[in-house]
Length: 112
Image 1 (tube, one colour):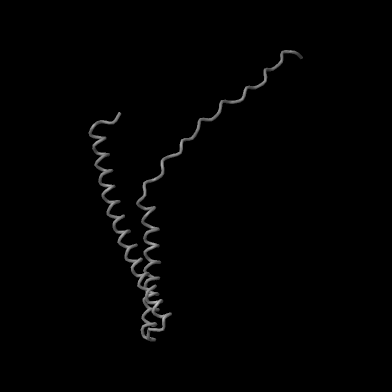
Image 2 (cartoon, helix red, strand yellow):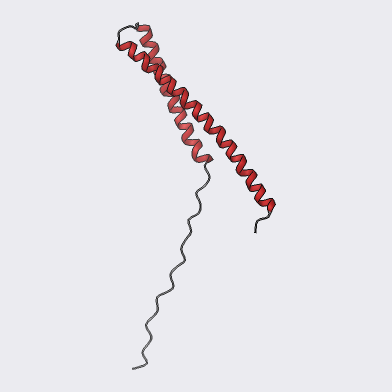
């Protein structure tokens, strides 16, 4: 049976884990918000390009920015993909059902 100290230790660890998780969630939110802003900016620049109001230098800058955003997005995706499983708690163990009792064997007949 767990003692009060054991329960308090577990509660303290869970509190620490929640705080760390909250920090990670905030970082992911900031990351996604920044990427959304970059995509919106690219969208606005593409609209200007379609309207014919940009120069070749602006087109080149847009292509460079798009490549940089794509690279950052790919890098961040890999980082998130690696971090989430690494920091996720392990799944609970699956209970193995008990083996069924052996089938009864037919009784040997006493006749010869």
